[in-house]
Length: 327
Image (tube, rainbow, N blue to C red; front, side):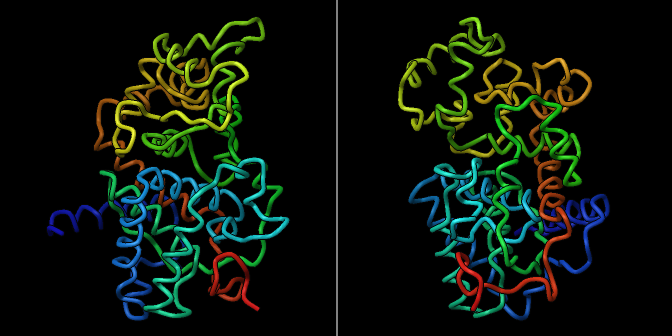
């Protein structure tokens, strides 16, 4: 990496740490001696996973997001069991990438047994997913422990694509994030897919009077009705960003200006009445400047990774298997 890029990474990280009030227990260099090849191992494994299925990049970021919004970034989403977060309304039949995390964990354990938490591995995997698909690179604060319990009830209350903007903003604020974080982190929908079940309500009877969502651009509406007809298979998927399906860029925000956001929760960032004084200006700014979006996205990811004071010290463990707590 060029010296200039290293300096830029350090600057972004330092500024975000100051702004977020990040805890000093976490440090980018915490594994420098105990697991010096950690980043290279994670990057290699994520790269292999993306070569097998490029969509996995979006899936790994989503896993990290859904983990951090429940009990902080503690790897609780990775736990199996009847009360697992995997079986919540937000994750059942939609959260993916668990096998990739298992593979990364096995590779890390082979090099540095008992050192790196599943929570840290997931945090790094999300960063690598962004970087390997063309997005920004930032320094990840590490040193989390894995949580000992899942929280299915909280996972049932994650931000939803069906909620109005004020409800989504409130859920971000409840975990210490702000409106900039809402818009920047929504930009992760610059790649990946969404099931028809998550947006088909916009296509035919959005108003309750037989009309589609008026904010949905007409050619996209026509295409989506073909993919997701009335009574069709709700598990079929459409790309969140049709312009650059597998690349991390700012096209997502350009789409919103044209009424081409796939989910209602995407388009309301630009088109809703509340957006005028909250999120619309950021959408416009990110559509015009990819570098601004990348900077804010990196800072928001750092802030999100510090939600609710991540588990550390005696309140957690380093799981041997990301799916179960240690015996």
